[in-house]
Image (cartoon, rainbow, N blue to C red; front, top):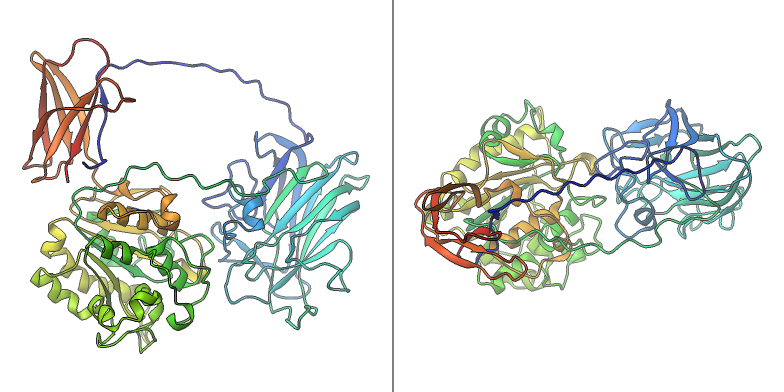
Length: 609
């Protein structure tokens, strides 16, 4: 049976609990920790401060929110805000120290770019206790996979004494002779490895003041690399009262999602990715009238759906969408360079379950393996091409990877597969702007206005279809929300939207739930699914009558068998069915005659496959 159900308890007991907790006084005690996030975002801790250039304020203890009595003042000379920064990759030093506290890719302009050698950003800490020691961690993560030579110089000033404990990939005077003891270099242009500037046993001077100064580095780098044209100032800081770092040393294990699987009533899935636009540039945009005026009013959508944080450019996001991982790929190279022997993909799970699928790609011929770019077709938008067991089998590939022009005929003939991966060409996918066009968004919106009616008017859609429209990543390799639109007879629809935090792992989990294929792939095991966007089978209400209990049930699936069940012991999990029926509408009122007179009872509605 499906694992989707709704509980209703027939007796209700309330327990009120009043707890009084005495708040401690303010002040920086040993072990107190403060975080500052220059541009707070989705993943910033509520007790982290968010001071940037031109701002100052008291730091707060991350655990309690109480003031530490330490003032942070941020000043800038020449540095400018930039619209893009990345998240640290999971498991790197920056991720270990800052995940859950600082969101490096916050909004609206999360990086501080230093273009000239004279540009700088200074974080000054005042009100420190000269009798205590401190430790400090800081970094910046521009997160662009090709910016491997943009180095920043971070310098600790004003301290009487300190010890350097910078992470392994940072450069100190031991490798760059021109640096002083208080200086360290970090490649902030990418910082894929999550390097940190790190000082321990910091003794502030008698005035209780220290400062962290960020500058663009212009000197030579060992190995012949140039310092690059741009540097990035520190945007995430951690200050601890105590000589040595006592925070996380390894990330806690990811907790598997407990969300029930199974999304009832969906038999055909269409996924369509657009390219490189933040959700706040789509929602309400005059360049996207079809999305805003036609699709969204009938859809459900998620306003805080993001690509995988820190993962760029396009190709690794497409791979993640169907595997839950990027195989350490962080570029857009052709399948001949980035091919994988793995069979842990959604395509292979569907094959094993006997579920049909096709990848419909605009501007391919369908007579050969499309693993190279040609015209406005790019292989990076066609994830099956990266897996050896598909790409090296011409007959298999040409059966499953087809020209987009064939989709309309497949829809009309009823031969559309259960899973359809759709990629428009570079013009229609909102990637390239054509001459004379006001926006690539308009091009994509126009394409959707021409093509979506073919899907929405098909029997495959009306008889249990679900269309997912999202974007591969944010603009300029950013990590802002990109949105997820769901159209389906089984969606809540009517413009329903939520602010639950989802990633591409959430879509993958949802696809696996719909088709019932396991095991969950990669990060899909830990992600919340998109079930909130769908209609939920549930008991809406119960009314006692002279003959029993009337149950109002909604979001049933006409033509499918359902059972109303009850139990007196949830732990034992023994359920008794007292009504089984096949509804012809989405709502029903059911009667349980003569329910037991004593003890609590639990009820659920279960849909059979």
